[in-house]
Length: 291
Ligand SMILES: Nc1ncnc2c1ncn2[C@@H]1O[C@H](COP(=O)(O)OP(=O)(O)OP(=O)(O)O)[C@@H](O)[C@H]1O
Ligand SMILES: [Mg+2]
Image 1: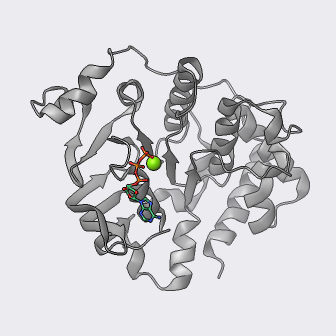
Image 2 (image 1 turned 90 degrees about the horizontal axis):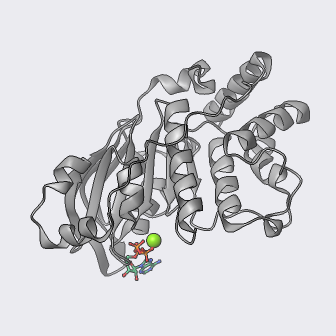
């Protein structure tokens, strides 16, 4: 399948996330320590752990919103917190982030919310932006909702809209904090299926998602980090996790019955007009490289 990302030079780099000897916390409080791990490019990594175990804290550091107490975070081989300010700002443009509540602006329509990163940062024409927004909303099953305000949408729709906004700049790194929390099981399964669809559509993308839900882990995870006792208690695939004798990890595993869910097939989306795609690639490249 042809991915809109494949036309962009910047996607040729594989954006592994490498966590090296990390110690994370706030002021005097240490939340996570003594761990190293790699979240591989082109895979879905799920960060799993109980409430307060530090999942959002880890994500916040990977995004660059907080600086580690010690250790390094390497994105595509670049040491995030050793970068000069300009390069730091540039690398953050390569991240699409879905916050827990979707973080949409209530005074803007869905279309305007999704258009925002392109309208603010690129020189794309309003017509091109409209076409890209329409296409991105289609990808997240929100075709036809561009004119709705966030308050007119369900929680699940708001999360999918947040995903559309995170994806509209075609980031090589997609980070999601509990994309299924607060959703009923049907909507939660749809969100999981959507992330699987995104993985198929954007095969180079590094997707990291936070969950406390084993159903999502079973549906999605190529790679799993379990946080417990202020550190990474497990890093590896689902098979390895399923074989663990660690009583804490077993608690997670045995709570939910396995489900068979290979995700939904990719939507047979009408692809974005190649001319618009070309202009989008150029505009995004020029934004990514700008000062
Ligand atoms: N801004 C902050 N300042 C100080 N401490 C914080 C801050 N944010 C989180 N913490 C603390 O860090 C610890 C981990 O919180 P975090 O939000 O990362 O957990 P979590 O695993 O995401 O939990 P949940 O599943 O409930 O979202 C908690 O003890 C929390 O009180
Ligand atoms: Mg959290």
